[in-house]
Image (cartoon, rainbow, N blue to C red):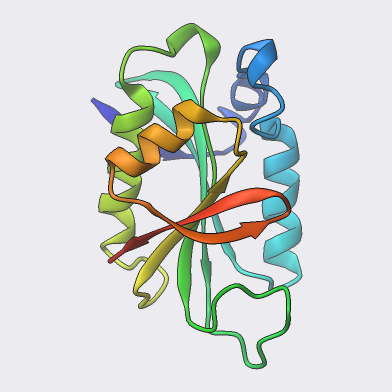
Length: 162
């Protein structure tokens, strides 16, 4: 059973040591960068980051980082949405545990979690992925995400309507 656990002093290093296959490293940032970005986002009031280690029972198998963005007071050209949204910033399954259905289970669990509106109301979950990442495209589409036709930093933007 897939569960999310907060990252703390007991599992921090293990999370940072998770890795994808070499050919996938262009598709997802290293977990240490993601955790640093979560810190920066939180301390600069950019959004409410929600980083979690993904476990199968008591064994860490991956990492996910979600975020909540409130409605921007003033929409600027970098804002794709002028409403509050949840976002899935990162989703990775360790190379030793790929191909076992964990990515789908983790994404479904993330959607379930976000539907509890842990940080506030929103009508959308947004994520983006590299155009070459066909596996991610198929996974996201099969779980109900639809491309908006927009790009963000060269990545395809997709939305799940809540």
